[in-house]
Image (cartoon, rainbow, N blue to C red):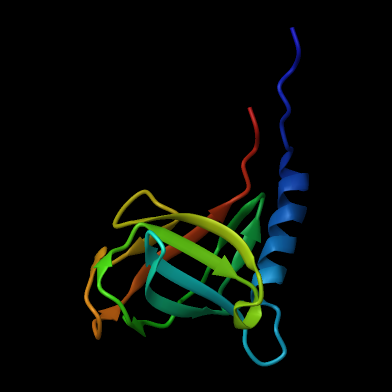
Length: 127
């Protein structure tokens, strides 16, 4: 029987360091995090390296400044982009618990201030 493929922590750490660098490296603007309902944009956040960590394949973003919603809907998708929204790097789920991006509330109305409780990207270890 074949052995499953598994990334070791040192390899996951290199990958997560590279992903964090890709998202947060920019000359004037750092990474962008969009929160959407399906394809509809609800709110956009700026991402920086301030307080961000990358350990054993887990990227944890530090404090993310609250942002004002530009759309109305129920948040279900998070998209992480390079500086100035140059390229899509990763997508994840959104929720109030147990999700890639944890919001204070997933029911968003235009003009509302939206807060992120946590944002974590995990490079999977494999099976």
